[in-house]
Length: 152
Image (cartoon, rainbow, N blue to C red; front, side, top):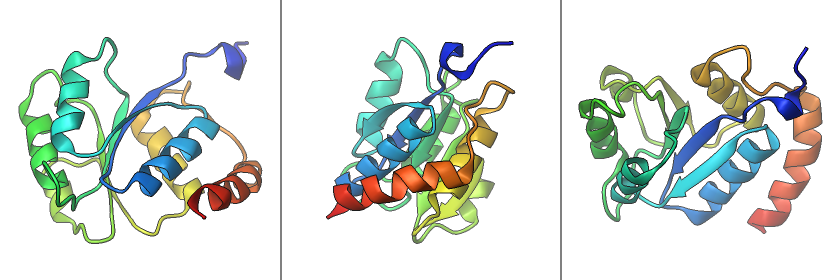
């Protein structure tokens, strides 16, 4: 049976104008077994997606980004682009409502978010039995102290 180290890691794109949130997401996802691409707003994210050799298995995006393209316009752009439309988009926001789901988001996660719940959602939308798995208690024992150091 194939072990976790030999499995191909899933790629996730995070889009958030807040650098500390991007850092938190990157650290949590990397510790959860994912590779991560980052963008500070929608236009930057679209440029990354169009230039990427490998498309991500999922996208996590903030809803309200005052500089550049916000989450709503970014989600609309992704869903209109045939090359990107099948990538599950998870909206991570303190203000997004269920309208994001009506626009095609796979899930909405409210800030502040629980790291284990976030990883479970990402694993779920990335799909497949090869999605990274781990014990929640092990994740949080490592993640919480490291992320606390990062955010202070």
